[in-house]
Length: 508
Ligand SMILES: *[C@@H]1O[C@H](CO)[C@@H](O)[C@H](O)[C@H]1NC(C)=O
Ligand SMILES: *[C@@H]1O[C@H](CO)[C@@H](O)[C@H](O)[C@H]1NC(C)=O
Image (cartoon, rainbow, N blue to C red; front, side, top):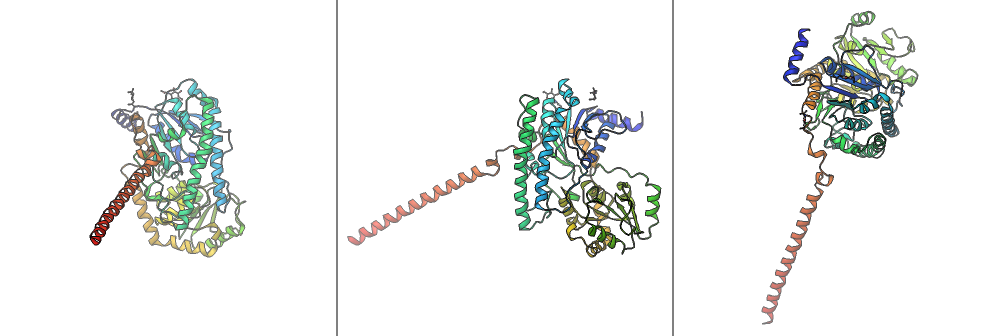
């Protein structure tokens, strides 16, 4: 046994958690979500916990203590192909996508034979990890298995989470993930996010949650309302950190663990390493993940980017799925697949032009690389707003993208002073009592150790009329009304008496 393992064994003995039997339920087929969780799941297995993981992404190479229940092939894997220009209509489309996929994921999960075996053979778990995104269906499964739940997200809170955890949603300073505006929204943006926030909550509750509840009822007797199970989650591990996404007000059962997916950089491939190290003025890395495809990107926007970067002395690395770019610019290295973590880790990489997905954004702050954010979809607008607000980069709206605008933004982020400030903030990001991974593991084991206790705030369970103090306000108003009415009556009585006396006096 290696020395490391002995230490782990001893610390496990002292914290009285030897090995937990953990079930992970990841019913959503989004790649960019599961890629956040994968390192954490592997780390739990490495520390001796026994993992059973239901997902669309079974391990390519088996590791000890990690058992897959694969849903692969049961649903088309999402490569995030969505409209490029954002509008209210695309946000409404997102909402339908969330509710529909949330129900489909629930059906696929419960129909699976290997999943059914879990409850049919009455498997015992100490803990169930559940991705909380489009559906709460897995909470019903966890309840059936009789295990406490740790919720996971790969992004900021979904609108209905605010109610589930009793976190105040105040549109005047709390961003909404699908919208811009950060923590200083305009009046228009506050109205916009108030309406959409309510819309998403009610749509989720009235369609997805309700349908999930019916599907669960086909398999299990006496499933409590999902509204209640959602409030019963022991811990929520939120994939954010205040240094990146701004300070939020969270109760003790919600913990920020953003950053744990970033692994130690490996060696860069030889040609890429040479391309970076031989650059005299550094490198700019461009990747829109799978957001902007060669086939779907407007030609004038691609040309604007090429024209802008051909006027600067830096070399460019661009994730692009075709062999060539129009005009075959010499200072651009293109490839369909690029080791993003290793590229961003290289000190010669000066800026990252990105769509602001949570994975890439997190890697950028981890390595202190300034960003140009061009959000397209999902949570990207609020990530981009947070980056700009916290001095980690600047934003461009794709509809405004021109050569001149991109050059102006590049000049801002390539400024050595700007870069210095981003590096400083990156230092703050790393300055934590425990690393992101240690924090996530700690709260996971804590939830299992203290499963008999609840750490959520009463704000989540108190009835709405009490939470909003409608009853208290009504009573105080009633007292005031009675008081003033009585006062008025007394005054008029006294006045009348006086008048009577005066009258008596006069007539005497
Ligand atoms: C670990 O998980 C596997 C797969 O679910 C299960 O077959 C096995 O019994 C578990 N081991 C322990 C010690 O609980
Ligand atoms: C929770 O309470 C039950 C019943 O008192 C007990 O058997 C169980 O060991 C407790 N669980 C933990 C994790 O302390």
